[in-house]
Amino acid sequence: MNDNKLSLKELWKSQPASLPNSKEMQTKLQSYKKNNLLKMAFAYFTQLLPLVVFTLMLIFIDFEHFSTKAGLFLMLIAIFLFMLKYGDFYSNFQKLENTQSNKVYLQNLLELKKKQHGFQTKFLSGYYILLNIGLCLTLFEPFSNMPFYSAVLVFLATALWVAFNWFYLRKKTIRKEETKINELIEHYSTLNKQLEE
Amino acid sequence: MAYVNDRVEAQDLTQETFIIVWEKLDTFRNESSIGTWIYRIATNNCLKMIRKGKVHKTAELPIHIMEKEMPASLEPQIKLLYQFISELPEIERIIISLELEDLNQAEIALIVGLSATNVRVKIHRIKKKLTKKFKDHE
Image (cartoon, rainbow over all chains, first blue to last red; front, side):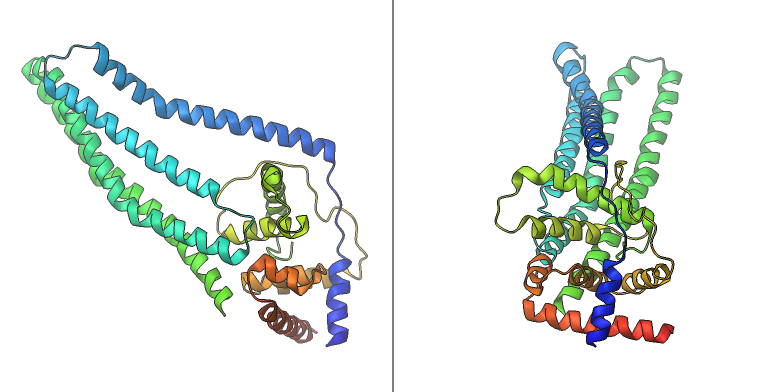
């Protein structure tokens, strides 16, 4: 066994490896940092834009019907909650301490993924319900001011869009997220089991 | 390299580890040796990854593994070692890589989160497995 031990180590040590160019490395790291900042700024901008627009509409436009205001408010809440919840998960994931031992890290990772899985289905359904009710309420005022046939046409198009969201997009999103999370949970559970042996 | 037995994936993992170390360096508090600290980041990063697809995309950093030429007689042997290690369960791959890197068992125990005794037993078993694989291959 000693001979084998020696040969494995010798073999391992004979693998060649070269050090990276430190200057080139630093330049790349700086550009990585810059790109990351730009990506984050863009993500915040695209998420905040509808929030700002809806808030400004609520403040500055004097709507005839209360339903329009209520609709906008509901959509505002839906988007706000969505951002809050995903921001929370993203920051929890970022905060996950990867300088801990493999055992602690894997346990935390698994816990986080299980939590995410637990809320995912319910939360996404709630988000779609709020968003669609908000959309219907908001559109009631423009419908009531339209000629009858145009109103029916636009109403049908909206109903189709809501149905598409609810029956296709929502289910597809949930299924996709679930598959991804389940795969991760299974992977991390297997690794945790290896540490229990 | 032995963990994934795939050069591109190994480069990706090395790059990611460099980025995490660079990002976290100011949080290093000397509670453990810098080596243990970096190995923990590197091994956690390996474990987080799923073979079929990665959790997140990496940046392109100029790190080149295996760029140097190696003696022709050793190349097949090293390739076999990579292959045999990559066939082991993930935690065993981590443990044997750290052992072959000449880390002492107490340090490996700190990185993996198992007791030193448990690590010693595991190393013994893994070496037996690898030796058998080499013998079976002959």
